[in-house]
Length: 547
Figure 1 (spheres, rainbow, N blue to C red):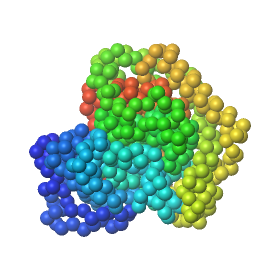
Figure 2: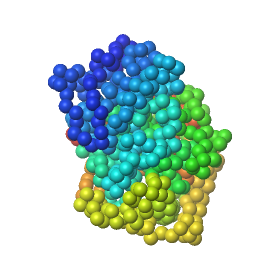
Figure 3: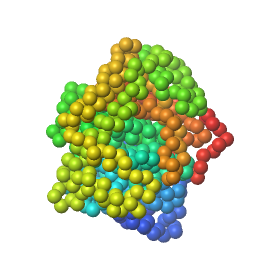
Figure 4: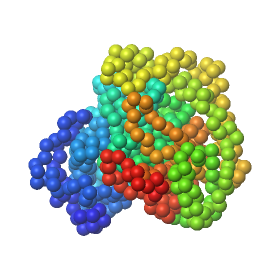
């Protein structure tokens, strides 16, 4: 039975497989052969199901949130623990089915909280959850006791009625531990694989969320970005992903890298689901002073931005600086620009940030200073009984457990950060001011004002590179840094394919312009309908370079 037929006429009760709770990295639960054959990899009736479709099914009584949760947990066992073994999930929530059942009872007694009521969500394993699951950033150093309380993003998702179904794997320490790191690998979780070609990388650091949402292991996902960790996995995995303006979403209770650049963001299969999810996450939070700047700029409902005619008359600047890393990607981007023109957009081509590329070393200095300050404060928040109390403790742990933590790459970034001084240091203040001036004032804001733009556009990144545990990642190009360093919003949506691997188109612009970017991305998405679910091939089809 296909998804639409199932959602219109079927019930989950007859199809969902019985599932015992999965805990952490425990062995898969055994199945009776008859039950195991009911749902195959290619005919799963909920594949690509959206929030709106699932809510319609629950409202009509066709299935419950508890049944929905069981079906997704079974999907995790079939595809993540077994089958192609994507390894996107670091730990499932032993209380997920109970939470969903309670939400079903609430729906029956009081009605629906909102569009996320009963919707399974996948959360990156650097967001504190005050439950039975661990929060570790993929590191064995933190794999002792759960966090004492929810991060703000998880608290908001729970308040909206979402079911936290699992934590996702990530590049350990969000790709901020050492040189030659391997995106998607962590000491605790192992290697996550790209569901479009299993020998390819899903990109980092939100690799597990990207691979998991692409593979339909949950309906929606939450992840984090410092520079590229929402947008790159989204592009590599054929998803819509948004890195919002720093301060739109609280970072409280999230394992930090940079107070200047860190943010959380949604990762979904459609722009409409992204808009729904974003509205549940915004708001001023006294636990994160950066959110005070969002007052008057944030919305709790971005569905009004879903305009299928948003591109008509929109002024878009093409940042050619982020072309040229692969001819096939350039060709797809040129096709995308033609679509934008056909939809009525006014294309200004090219535009070039005056200081483009001039903040690389300064960005690294800012992150190194801010990580030491932030991680020491975060570790203190885990309570007096938590064994890891400082960055120095983490370095010592890794050295003592190098056979499990340092077998593929080192901790040079940790060591460099430990050497840095306080945030009052002249070197830090100079680097931070330089980044702001070059990336934001002379970068995005000047370009937007000079050309009267609604957004900047460029390819998001290259197609997924091969997983390489010896040499590390093989990045050849991306457009993530300008928006990341400036703290401005960045939306990526699927724009095409290279040998069966998805590539994304980026829209980025002024601070607090999330609604505008969503509207532009939605129009492009609806005009192209590029996304398709993965088929879990062992490797790519080399028969076509541009398709």
